[in-house]
Length: 561
Image (cartoon, rainbow, N blue to C red; front, side, top):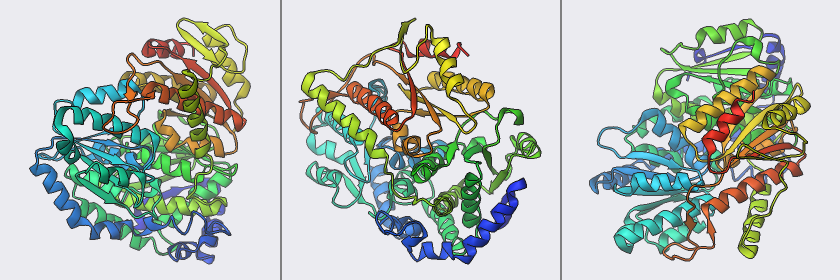
C-alpha cells in the first residue's frame, strides 16, 4: 500500500505525533524489529525472539502454496460441502473474517466457525452439519486449548458413531504447532492432514500463516493473490517511513496522550475485519497498567456523544463512502481521525500485515512488549479450579445473589431493589472520564441477542458518552480478556450468564463415552473464573443471570435505560 492511502487528521496532536515519528526513525525502530532486536521492547528476550515469525509469514505461506492447493483439491474431490473450524481467538478470527467477507466461491465448501462453549450453540452446529459431508478443522497453536479440545472430542465422537473410525479420521484436520498435544492426538486418531505451523508465530499474529490461509484456500479465495499483497506490504514495511510505522506511532503516541479508545468505523463489506484487529490490539497492548481499547462495531453517532479520549480509524474501500459525512463531522469537531483506503477485498492481505507491524510499533511507543499475555492465564487457572471443584463435589462454587426479580438473578457489590436501579447505580457511581463499559455475554451467540445488546450498548454510549464494547464469552477471553485485566483498571463489566435448554456432555477422551463435565458447566466455570479474575484485579463487575429465557431477560434489561 502506498502512502497516499493513509490520511491522518490528528489536529492538536500533530506535533506530538511528528516528534514521536522522528524518534522512531532516529532509533531505527522498524529496522531493529526486522533485525529481531528484542531491546526495542524489553531488556529480556523472553517471549519476543521466539514470537517474530509473523514477519515472514507471507513469504513462508507462499512457499507452502502447492501443499495447500493439493490438500484443497483432495477435499473438493472427496465431495465435502461444509467445513466446521473449531478454534478460539487468533486461531478462529482470521478464518471467520475470510468467510464472512468473501463467502465461498462456487464449487467450494461453506465454512462455519465454532468458538462458543454454549451447549445450545454446539448443538445448533451439530444439527446444521449432521446430514452434510463435513470436514472438521481443529485449530489451536498450543494444541491444548480447553474449548477447542472439547469441541474436537464431541464432534469426533458424533462422527465416529455414524461413520466408523477410518472414515472419521478422513474428516478431521489439525492446524497446530509442532510437538503439541493436538499433533499427538491427530496422529493417534489418523487425521486426514496435520498442518504444522511456524512455532515462532503467536496466535493473534497468525492470520497469514496456515491458521488463516488454509481455511481461506478451502473456500476458494485466491490465496496467492492475497499473500502477494501481504508480501508487498511486508517489503514496504522494512523502512521507518512506511504506513505501518506511521500508523503504529500514531495509535501508540495518541494513547499516551489520553486518546486510548481506538474506535473503528469500517465500511460494511469489510466490517468483519474489526473483530480480528480488536483481538490483536487488545491482547498485545493491554498490560502493565497500560492499554489501547479497540472499539469495534459501536453505533456511529454525532460528535457530541463521544468524550475526549477517542481516536477514530476510518477504514473503507475506495468506492464505499457511506460513513464519509459522519466521519467529517467528527474531524470538524476536533476528534483525531486516521483514514485508510483499500482498493478491493484482497487488500485485506496487506492490512493483516500492516496492523501486525503497527501493533508492534505501538507497543514500543507505549513501553510494553506486545507478544505476551500475562493476565490471560489467571482466568484460565480460576476456571480450571472451578471445574475441579465441580468434578469433586458435583457443583460449582455458589455466589450470594443480591436480587431475584422477573426471572433475572443479580450478583454484585451493590444494594438495590430493582434491575433498573442496579444498572443506573452501577454506572452512575463508577464511571469516570477515562472509563469504558464492557458487556460480557456468556450466552448463545445469535442475531436476536446481538441486536438487543447493540441497542443497550448504544443507550449507555449516548447517555454516558463512554466507549462500550461487547464480547461473547468465552470467545472474548482469547481476545480482549487480557486488556480487561491488564490495563489501568478503567473498565466496568456487565456480565450476562444463562442456563442451557439442553446441556451436552464433553467426552473425557475422543472415541470414549465417559464424561465428567458438560459444555454448560465449562461455560459457567469460565464465566465465574473470569469474574473472579476481574475482581482480583480490582475491577467492578455486575452479573445478570438470565436463566433459560435469555431474550426476554435481555429485553427487560435493555428497557431499563
